[in-house]
Length: 356
Image (cartoon, rainbow, N blue to C red; front, top):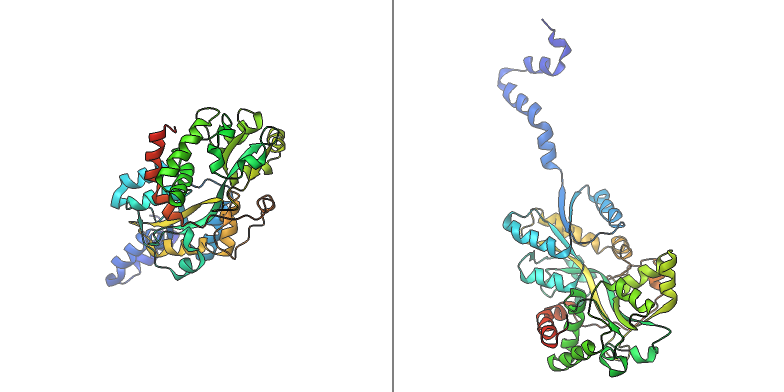
């Protein structure tokens, strides 16, 4: 018979008094499971797909010991997944990349309000929901890019100029229904009302060089190629091309220039990427802690540099030279949730004027 001395764990069990035998046995069997159950985790549903986010998440884990589980999808598939999961959703934190999407998710009841002095003090009011259901952590401007050889920059100093008859046949855009455009159009409605915005959108359609298609980078390249003379783009797409060392991208940069729109009036339209605590978050306290971490100066640099954006926290710095090279500008201070709330009206106007 094999000696029990070769199996110390069994020796310990057989030498344990009978009253303690069962608890000892269950402890031996369940110990690893209990340890796993006690591990702190945070489930993040993210529409961000940037390499620097690895550092962002890793820093949080080092600071707190909380392991992050990530689900990465596009904004719409991510939100549809949460809707289908309902109150069984494991999501703790949701990260999205547009104010209109954040607003719609808020209205769909996918978020919950957050009580945090850190967040309300560090995130400016124009970059968060009024009921504190979501917060913006990085911002970008929607600017006008133009072909330096064929367009006089004096003719494209405002968003309104996109509808000016002098620019007929020169305008390229992505789909009017894309959230980046819906946010801009919503801001315009807030500033000048439905009637004037409708006339403006009708003018843009009349000035199109081609039907809307592609993303912002495609618009920049179309301007460089001469397919059109003017386009809208988020600043981070422009900076991405500027920072590229590919000869084709450098050729684009040599042919295209950028304008900060509406500097003598409302200022350049601003949008944001942000986050929220999911409505049914299993780890609500840790989710709030993570959002507060995103508002720290160190995290703001990771969060913003991952996509060439500006921090929303005033004290944070990026160290992104290409972004800083864009210079200073007047930004539109309209509250982000107000313009996002106008997205339904904006879509109605797009349908009315035939803006695809």
